[in-house]
Length: 344
Ligand code: TXA
Ligand code: MG
Picture 1 (tube, rainbow, N blue to C red):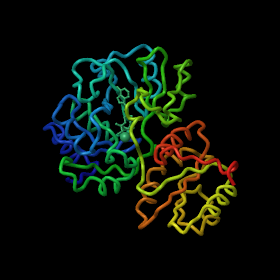
Picture 2: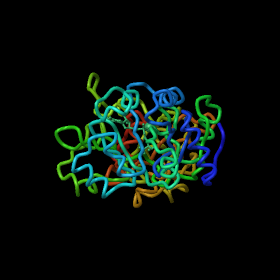
Picture 3: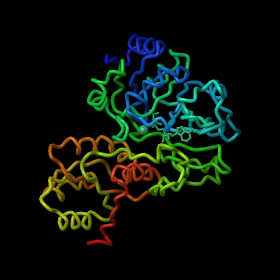
Picture 4: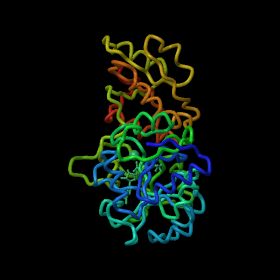
């Protein structure tokens, strides 16, 4: 894997590699993506191999100009309104697909996920390529998404399928894009992100939220978004989400401590109170965008602590932008959430 900067020359190199069917890790404003020419089946195949991604989990295609939108799907009036309001930016729309998009990209579905990222580097690469890029988050399937360039180096530098990685620094949002389906009876939020439900309601007043955003899928239940069916974002250590005040979370951890090496992902300013444990502050619940920005880096840091067996995460209530963080933490913990104010 060659390491590239965001200089014009390096981005040209990246686009040349993508044009010949190679795959590359690139920065976006949400998380790093692992990109391939979305119209080249063999290139897209490499993404699935590199990530160990199940073939039933479709990919998002990334465009850099609104004129491309209708080339790959059938946008509705609402879709154009959403594009006008939120693109470029962290919003993905699911729409009926056009046949130019290979089946491997959509895992055989008749719909396709499309987004226009706002990250200048991602946009330049797509424009230099002249074709849309299929790009899932660049993590190995099931692991926390990469939001810092060092995560890419750790995960992919030895990966035989990945030709290059572009260093774009830290990802601003830190959680993946909001995914909205526009193919059902009513518009439906499949994955929460930095574009919140309230923001979407300006264009989609009757939007619903998929059950899988906050609940484990029931056996035999078909996922609207296949990605929600798979175990995800999970560190190796046992991970438990704790809601409640600082004091009740601390009481809970103290009373359940059993000599296992324990890390606590706490809010900024709580470090001193949790100092009996390894603390990793990850932002402030008053500014949920800070939690989003840091949550994956914090999970990875906790997972990197030698012999760490338990990770407790002080978790903010799922309101507004914090819904996206809560949704990722639910999956990271395999839905283990404890309200410490009820369980002391
Ligand atoms: O922010 C992002 O969206 C990042 C960056 C790299 O752009 N990409 C990303 O891709 O998160 P990925 O593959 O990790 O997540 C895509 C999600 C998955 O849950 C997938 O199941 C869902 O979108 N998805 C893709 N196509 C779909 C479709 N046609 N119908 C329903 N869900 C779809
Ligand atoms: Mg992903």
